[in-house]
Image 1 (cartoon, rainbow, N blue to C red):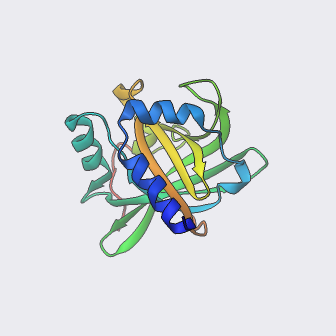
Image 2 (cartoon, one colour; image 1 turned 90 degrees about the vertical axis):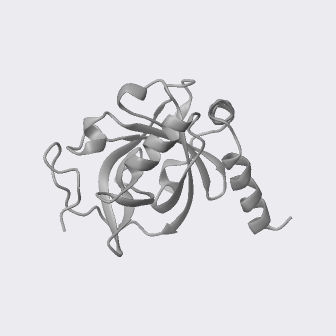
Length: 185
């Protein structure tokens, strides 16, 4: 099997799993090396478990204010910490917003190390709702993420990251929450 075929098969396998299966699989994975999480990664929302979560999270990630969610990006700023942002396609351009702090930390799900994305340190919508993601490596260039936020802190919301597809840029200037969840034009 070629590398491209193997990559495609792995991605399709993750896309076909239920949230419980994804969480169980997540427990078998290891955190990526901190230094490997550098650049922009394409993201795909995985099965959210019920129509409500699926529709709600799609609407949060893909709407006229934010644009269409493309992915996440990271860069280390030390041996064990870094930062990043989310990417959206809006009005014909890529918008980089909703910054996060990154580190390696014990998982809320099983206590093993995960690449953690913490948004609360930034004054944005994602910080305001207490969003936190964990990422583990599935294969070369494929990562499984589980996120939580707000009232859904005990509900694992899965996503897939592929890449890096480009180098790290920098986040655009964001309006401060709560008075502007939309990117300034």
